[in-house]
Length: 165
Image 1 (cartoon, rainbow, N blue to C red):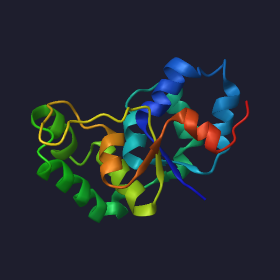
Image 2: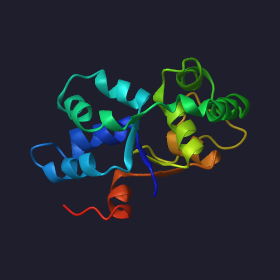
Image 3: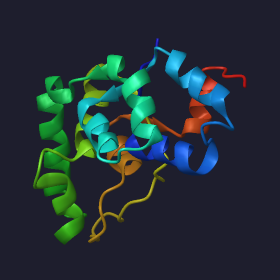
């Protein structure tokens, strides 16, 4: 049974743009009942920064499925090594991922690698070409792919889990 780790942006996009609560309640009910959907403690913390309906929903529905991603310290070190030695990112973009362990994204990749989970994100698979570098922040799908971790969109999750609304 596959575990799905939901990224902050997948929930924010769903809440703000695609499936507003009160209009698409079945989507939110399905996500609250799907025990394969997990949330890491750092993603949870990011979502709690905004006190709104989404943070309330997360507290009421995903808090019980919050996992501590720090069991993946070795994999986190792999993510950091890839970012620091690949010469693909510089400046502020790289600093977002390597200068603090509070950033959810590298821990999300690390934990997914540790437990062979799939990350659900709305980020696109883009990154700098080999030999060039970017000042933009790394994207989860690019780093994940380089480290052998699967990523899908929320819509792909609905298909894989045979969601019907």
